[in-house]
Length: 492
Image 1 (cartoon, helix red, strand yellow):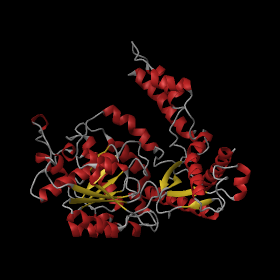
Image 2 (cartoon, helix red, strand yellow; image 1 turned 60 degrees about the vertical axis):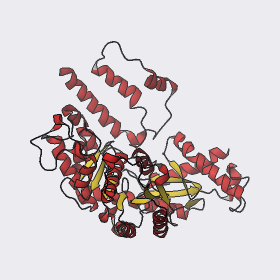
Image 3 (cartoon, one colour; image 1 turned 180 degrees about the vertical axis):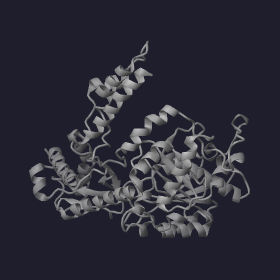
Image 4 (cartoon, one colour; image 1 turned 135 degrees about the vertical axis):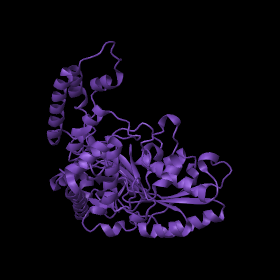
């Protein structure tokens, strides 16, 4: 234990130094060939290595090459910096190393509290046992859709677990064109088939078109299909859009569909000042997926599946072999009865520490501040002659596009320069697409900010997701400056 004690002290110093010095370092840089070879090509040592030696490798070969998401100028995807309290307790969870499938110990008991806290934060009706922590929202989505599938089958007089799907009317799932890919993956894994994932158009604000949803459900019923679930978004990845949840809940109720809300990233957006009306109807969902490891900054990976009626998830998953019968268990049973995982890590400790460290006030301030910065960035984009805002800013994502001015095109000879004269010709559109498609990688390589791209309405676009509590308005100005500079470099 003496070696562990000494090494743990050094590891704590490494963690603290890394977190304290992030702003002074490049956000991201490509991994040099020598380190890439070390990271990917090591042979298993014949004899064991000391802990101090391992820490040296971590310091020299691992910490030097971060993804970048800890940096306040990381605007890519939906990846937050880690909350220090979550970092602090991770080694303690590993020291206990329990399986949180169930049982009378700290892990499962603390998970009950954490799940209740999350439900209370977003205003989701919570019964005891009405949720569980997962590896992320992808697993939470599988749990929720499997529960929806089983409930639909039971209502129709059969059992999907016992009978399988063969010979039954195809079950159809409805998602918008902006719905997350995890919904289709879940449908594929659950045997529904990607063809049964019906893609509903969106409106000009990239929200699900409820009228189109109604039409598609009617058409599918007439064609002999079995609509069973509509999955709405409370904060899409591309634009942060929140679907009209109340209206979609009405449609689901009229047709007896399971109403699922994907709030992996955006559900916490309901806490921002003035945001609640946009989220009206989220509390009507049968299930809600969210990710504490996104906006809250809980160290990866921690998702959560919340269920209005926990008994329904238990009906979809409970399978207790004789060696796991626990006479001490309460009426809720084990967490393993509510999802596919048997051995489950102690996710609750880092989530509890993060949420306790922030407190409700701190969580609200984090969500409100980052949402406000996204709106500020949106205003900066609208005020600039060479940028175009592509969607309303609803949460903490700003989706936009770089459109170099005539002077900039002449100076930089940008990819759009030769084609774009009036902004409407097909060549101009193609040139703008090529430019905006190339910009994220060019910006990333410069190392000063990190930006990712996407496609919106068929056009290549840029998107900035703001999750760090340390991001400032100066960082936003630098983001636009770096995009302009990278565009000129691409032109040259």
